[in-house]
Image 1 (spheres, helix red, strand yellow):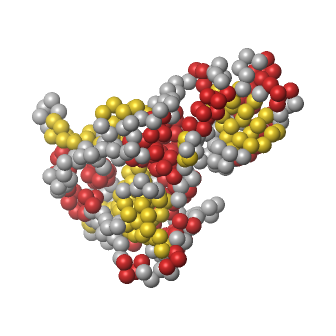
Image 2 (tube, helix red, strand yellow):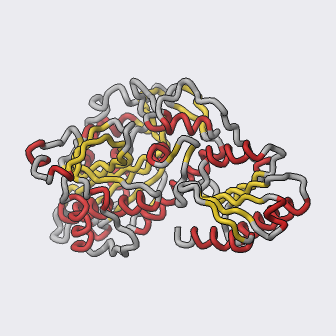
Length: 445
C-alpha cells in the first residue's frame, strides 16, 4: 500500500479522553473513531490488525478440530427464558422489541442459541464429540465503558461450544481449548497466563481466565514468577491424544496463578519468596466447563449406545478478539508509539523514501516495494512529499516491526538501512539483502 493513497488520519496530540496507553495510541494512529460511549468505528489500519488477529484465532481453532459457523447478533428472548437466564443476566443485556412486539436481545453470548441448533440436528452419541465456534460482534451494556476497546459495549469475540457424551470427554475438550488458546496468544507475541477464575453468569464450576500482565489490568493477580516463562514454542500437539493434552495443561496450571477472586494467601506463601509476584492482568479469554446446565434446561439430549437418552455435557470458550488488540498494545509499546509483533502487524514492513522526486531514490523504493509484494508480503510505502522527520514519526507511531529507509546518498552506494522497531537497531545492506532479510523473518510467522 502507498501511504499517499491510504486513509491514515494520525493525530499529533494525545486525545484528552484517552486514559490508558492502548486507547491513546489507537486514536493517535488513526485506528479507531468513537461513535458513542464504548462503540467504535474501526478505521483501515485498526481493521487490518483486527483481521490478522481474527485469522490467527480461526487457524488455531481449526487446528484443534473445531468447526466454524456464524450465528445472528439478535436473539429471541424465548431461548433465554428456557435456560432461565433472561431475567438473571442483568442490565448488561440490551433488550429490544421488534415491530411485532416480540422480545429480542442483542446477544452478549450464545449458549442458548448454540444449544438450540444442537438439539434441532443432533440425536445420537455417534455424532459426538462436536465443537462449534464463531467470531461475531457482541453487545454488553456496560454501566461504565472505558479504556477504548478494552472495555467497550460492542466488541468482537470468538465463542466456541463443545458437546460431549461424558464428563471425561468434555474435560478433554476443555483441555484442548486451553492448549489451543495458549498457542493462539503466543502467535500474537503475548504471554497469557491461565488462571483459575470465577464463572460469573455463564455458570459451571471449572473455569480458567487467560490474563496478560499489564499495569492497566482490571484484575489483581498473584503468580509464581516461573509461570510467564512457560512456552509451547514449536511443540507439535496431537489434540486427539488426551494424555498429551492433559500433560500440557498440567504444566501450565500446576504452578500458582490466581486472580484476586480466587487467591489463597496460604498457598501463595508456600512459593519461594523471591518468586512471588503480585501484579495486574488484562483478561483476553476464558474457558468454561458447565456440564449439563443448558442441555438439561433446553432438552439437548442424545441416545447412548445402550439406547437410553441423556443430556449432553457442554462447555463454552471465549476469546476477546477486539480486546486483544488493545492488550497487545498495552504489552508492546514505547514512548514513540506501538510496537507490533510480527504475527499481527498491519503491514510487514515500512518503506521510507527520504527524497521523494529524486529519480534514483524513487526507483529504488519502487523496486523494493515490488520485490516485497512478490514475496507475498504487505509493505507500506511512505511516498508522501513530507520531511523525513514526519515520516519517521508516523512509522514509529503505527509500529511496523521493520523499516527500510532509502535515501539518495545511500542508494548511490547501493545501500539502504533496515531498522528493527523493537530494538531500534539499524543495519546498512543492499536493497536485495533487505528484502531477503524481511522475507526470512516472516517465514513461518
